[in-house]
Image (cartoon, rainbow, N blue to C red; front, side, top):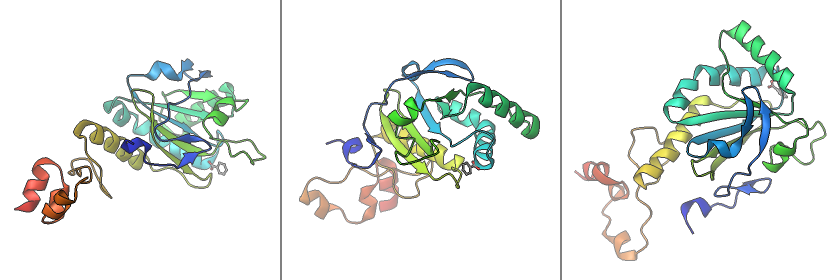
Length: 218
Ligand code: BEZ
C-alpha cells in the first residue's frame, strides 16, 4: 500500500489515489477536456451558484492569487450548474465591481453529469447545486487530495496554496508533511518499519529528513 492508498475517505465514491474521471465541457475559456491538463497540476473545484456572496469572494481572491498557482505550474478549473452565459455575466460583474479578471475556465454543468461523477452534488440534495468540493489532481491525473466545504463557508485560498505546496514538496523530497507544515519547513521521513530503528532514534529530531534532522539533533 502506498501513502496515497492509505485513506478510505471518499467524496461520494472518489478516493485519494483514484484517477480523476475525464470529461469534456464548455467553459468560459472555450471547450475544455480534463485530460488535456495532464502534465500539470490541476485544482478542479465546484461552487454552489454564480452571483452568490461567498462564491464571489472566493473567485475574487482566486483571481487575485492566480499568478501564485501559475508559478507552481497548477491550472485552476471551476464548475457549477449555471449556464455559460450566467458565468460570463458574473465574471463581468466581478471585473466591473472588484477590478479583477477571472481568466481560468469555469465549466457549465447544467445536467450535473460532471458534478455527479465527482461527487460534487449531495445525492439527497433537492436544489441540485454543487457543494464546495476541491480536487487536487497531480500531473499524472491522480486525485491527491480533496476537500468539501459547506455552502455557507468560503475556502481559504492560502490553504489551497499550502496544500499544493505540501503535495509538491512530498513528491520532490519523498517525505511527509507534518502538522502545520509551511513551505520551507522540513519534511518528515516515512515512519520506521523496523523496531531496531525505532529504538535507535534518540529523539524526535530523527524523524526529520536530511539536514533539518541533523540540525535538530545538535
Ligand atoms: C454563497 O456563495 O454566498 C452561497 C451559495 C449558496 C448558498 C448560500 C450561500
